[in-house]
View 1 (cartoon, rainbow, N blue to C red):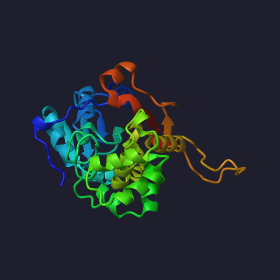
View 2 (tube, helix red, strand yellow):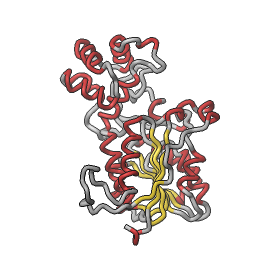
View 3 (tube, rainbow, N blue to C red):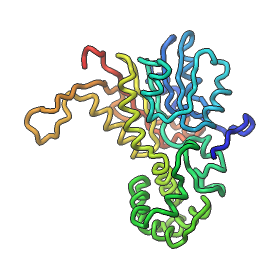
View 4 (tube, helix red, strand yellow):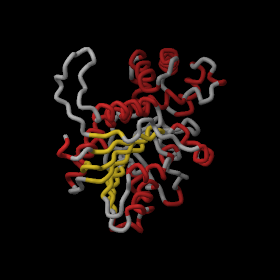
Length: 320
């Protein structure tokens, strides 16, 4: 069960690239916006402030604790915001249900939030002892403990390699299987640290990639991102902006490939001499390269160090 938090338990959270989000979303007074990764509401507040007067926002988060906190944090915008506990993979359904389309902008801030990392009972962090959970929402069936203790050694190694890009994935999986049952975050982190060569000398904790892999697998994050990007494009009005912030290469690759594909009139393989795909561009790339946080932001908020922001604009409907 995912515990809801009291206001006094709100962990410190600084939304990343906030100024850039407002600039690349091209937020305008009276606009309609969707924050698909609501969290504690930091980005949403900035959007609402920039969209005043008259702006409205739909906020979505799979984590009910995030929705609770954001509801309290955005209470002064109560008449301009609707906050929904849902997974962004169901974006189109949510927008249809609440008649919230077309919109001027859609924002994604992928990955785990400071709220989740700061909740010791959620199992996202190896800094404190907790059950191996890692679910974004309490209704999800599979937990990290299920993967760690029930997957075959081969399947476990595949998850750690595919989603964590951990070079020692086979060694890590072998160590985990030999230590089963594994029940807590600190226990798992210690097992992984012994399996990763030179773990103590790495810039990041040797368990970081394995924990990332388990979290992605538990929440089926990459499939959700692919589905949500398609839906976001379809609910944007002409000239509307799509902004996506990624924190690791797997997320960023999906966003980059999606925006490149949807900004091209032909997606045929280069070996085909003539276009046969009938694909027509629906987006225009705004950021040719990912936008990174400034040195000043990184010094204030180290979490922002790996953030990468990409933006595309919906082409006018008559052009696609």
